[in-house]
Amino acid sequence: MPSKNNKREPYISRRQFLLKTAATCGLAATAGVWGYVFYSKEPVRRSESRILTFKDFRVKDNTVYPNLAVVHGQDAEKMVRAAIEKIGGMGRFVNPGEKVLLKPNVSWDRQPEQAANTNPAVVAAVVRLCLEARASEVWVTDVSVNDPYRCFARSGIENAVKKAGGKIRLTTENDFVLTNLKGESLKVWPVSSFYHQADKLINLPIVKNHSLSKCTMAMKNLYGSLGGQRNRLHQDINPAIADLACAIRPTLTVMDAIRVLKRNGPTGGNLSDVSMENTIIAGVDMVAIESYGLRFLDLKVEDIPFIIMAEKRGIGISDWKSLNVAEMNV
View (tube, one colour):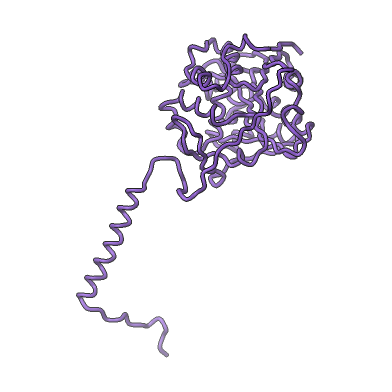
């Protein structure tokens, strides 16, 4: 019985063979040329993707309240609550039914005592305050440098957020969308899609030393919104940080200066590099908050080019002493 697989290939002449070979080689060469022409080192995954822009997450200014609240104490929850209450309460920043995105620093596979990530008690306190303001959902995210599962677990943030009623959102490769940051250094870049899905954004940085930028606080913390080859931005880090501050305007910033990493940042690791400062700073002016935080790292505004750049672009005021600042102990 003949097999259906027992077939002869149709006969082709030598001339037909050479013509087919030439055509195939031509197609391959054309594809190679087009691939070379359109190859780009820009961190863009899909050229056909729609390019988005950031919304402005800020609320209207209110001169009734202090510009900054600085709270000292031993209990993170009490400190956070006192700071936010002093500048108008969470109801000033979050409306019922809104989806709120919290951006702590969860970059590193470190324990809370090492002060490489935002204090988990600070993150949990903000989650609870948002839910008390009747937010529909509170998401907590970061694009970690180390393995994100280990970072969120070992930092204590995953457990703290879940107990407080929030949701951890880990950004996968498919969660990035092309976003035009309209900056001098940062133009079109992959950004976590969660920033485009939220109604409000609360920035939760920690005060740390940084080997390149000298410090990482409110503005540098926004790096954690980006995907792509972020290490490329370190080649010209000050304009990149200023671009981020212009592109992403959080609703509120609550800065963690409970444990401060004074040396060997941003990763840290040695407890001798950590100083207990037991302070929370809250407000809407990232430049002022950043400038206040320099005291913990023995730095001045003139030492940090990106603060000066951000101020020149109208992002905020570096002379925090000229503002209405409420300072208290709880």
